[in-house]
Image (cartoon, rainbow, N blue to C red; front, side, top):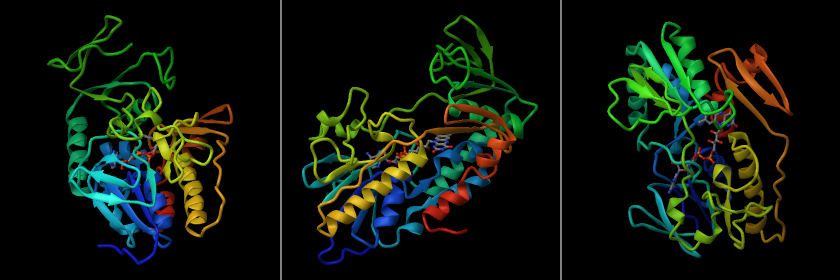
Length: 335
Ligand SMILES: Cc1cc2nc3c(=O)[nH]c(=O)nc-3n(C[C@H](O)[C@H](O)[C@H](O)COP(=O)(O)OP(=O)(O)OC[C@H]3O[C@@H](n4cnc5c(N)ncnc54)[C@H](O)[C@@H]3O)c2cc1C
């Protein structure tokens, strides 16, 4: 278990995605850090689809929290409520804080251990391997990346991608109506088409992981879609010692992991100022935005500063190792 050293200020970080993990790593020697996450590990989210076609990739992209935060307390549980000075967990533990940082991002299928998650990827890999035809629902970045991963590694599979928009990567637009019914491999779209497939993957947006705040004192700090409203210093509106970072915030920008890391840096600086008694706050400025969607192992489509590029050049930026080594370095890991 980690240190709880004398007079150090206590920073409680809720959520061990990229935002919370980077912050915990960078603050662990400056404060008494508590990281609350229902998983024992951090997952490099943008590598998750490669793990479905190559389950051994998950050995590299799932990292136990204990490997990079050795000087903090890790609590494997959900946060279920928050008060002015405490967080309550799903195991009934009450964790007091001086500074609280909420980084719960989006909801996901949770497995507690890294081994359980690797088993899940092996099962998904087997579903893909044993199917002749695969239906992917959703034409956003996740649906397109999954179609790319499967078509490169399993070129003989018939892949059908169903989406609402006029074109892919539009985030809106034909949906499948009966996925929850027993379909016997027959799916009907809202446009009346029938699709036959041996298996399907649902790649539509995940809900925000903020339902735990809906009965808390922060309920009126959630916007209508459940994002936490923050000020320019990434403090939850009206709170002096509660911050929010990553996908959970209402910052009007694309929800991206590289931006979540910048949020974490801003809050790290501010908390260090506060701990050192400085009356100073760091400010977040939403910068130029880019998105790269990989299309298998060597190609990608990128939108950078309004220009769109497709092929091997953007592929070189992302598709080889999907930033796994770079992300590990950010967490002080070099293997
Ligand atoms: C396929 C794919 C490809 C992507 N590609 C890119 C890319 O190329 N570049 C890029 O910058 N971004 C990319 N993204 C986006 C990026 O993954 C997200 O923006 C980023 O993961 C957000 O990080 P986060 O820490 O805010 O939230 P999340 O990653 O959603 O993490 C939230 C954490 O909070 C925990 N949590 C949830 N509820 C609770 C609770 N009640 N109590 C405690 N803990 C809780 C979860 O267990 C999780 O650990 C991609 C995403 C996907 C899915």
